[in-house]
Picture 1 (cartoon, rainbow, N blue to C red):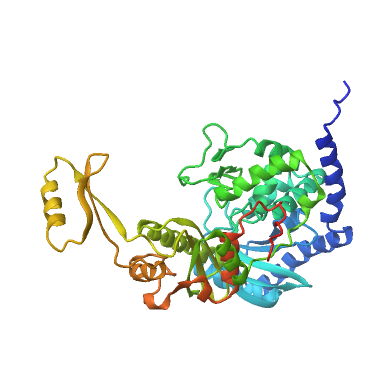
Picture 2: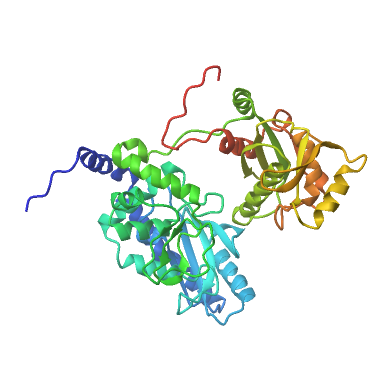
Length: 474
């Protein structure tokens, strides 16, 4: 039976993706170099292990470098050094780092959930990560122990045609700014992208599915939903090598929403620009000041020193600090319009936008429901001389008592400074001395990379495939 003619949008998507795919693919010569490295790097590790009588079980290059699913301009080489499960974690760390130093040039210690080394091998950047050679991926002893199983699962199923589709999917997500499972990004990991492309057969296959999704999305089989999922989970996809693990745990609801909307828009109007990484930069303080003048709002900036933590450990605490500031300000009677946060090498910044820099003098207080024993105490307290009542006591529409008193402190920055001793910013971020936290209006804040990033998230929110509109006077 003859195939039905494609719609104009399908035909254009075919043309666009056929034009883009060759630009994303590494050259055959480069792929051959990576393939040689996949063999030579583990061989060097095995030789080093023999020299020092190390209990290494095996060394393996895994991830996109092993499957050829990396993008031409983005190659991460992950070398996993796997040791016996009975080895102590201290011995694992020491042996893994020693072997990494033996084979890598200019090795530097890095930290994720445990220490690893980043260095170079024959011109390539390599992460050497210690782990355990486990037999059952559903019972890992360290965060990386499942990776060799991921490698085997995908390598057995991916075809050259699917690899092309995976590269298109990764580049599409880069355009949306949601590729990467790091805590700073909260997007889709490479492994998740490969699983989704495998499941739906192509980039367009899973974009067609995604445009119909409603958050939260559950892609698990009946009865196969991983346990202990958080209330704010965005997407559920069980790991095929460990069904108890949700592969999409890092993905935020916001970023899944971007994907859902972007899928529908791309399928309706495919263009090559969807596969070009956006060049838009962060807005600076002067631009932000012009924007808040047009918005007739006020922005306060909270700044504190960055602790010595990697991003994946730091950013959950940064976002906790942002929530703590925004919730406190809302409780204090300000109309919160938005908040954003960011970190650079030296500092952490939270930017908060409110409708007005000064709250009303009126402070509403809710009393007990009429008829309870505590009513007498409430009336006695707020009818006494010197109570500072502006209005009341009175009965509210819901039948409870109420009274209106006066806020003595009305300035936003001062309210925040007074609240700091009671706010929790996270285990490593909450300063011992609240005086170490700077709170000031935007006009007085330092123009730093962290501030620019936070201001962009606060005042330049826009779907990533849309061009920034031209602003008069900007």
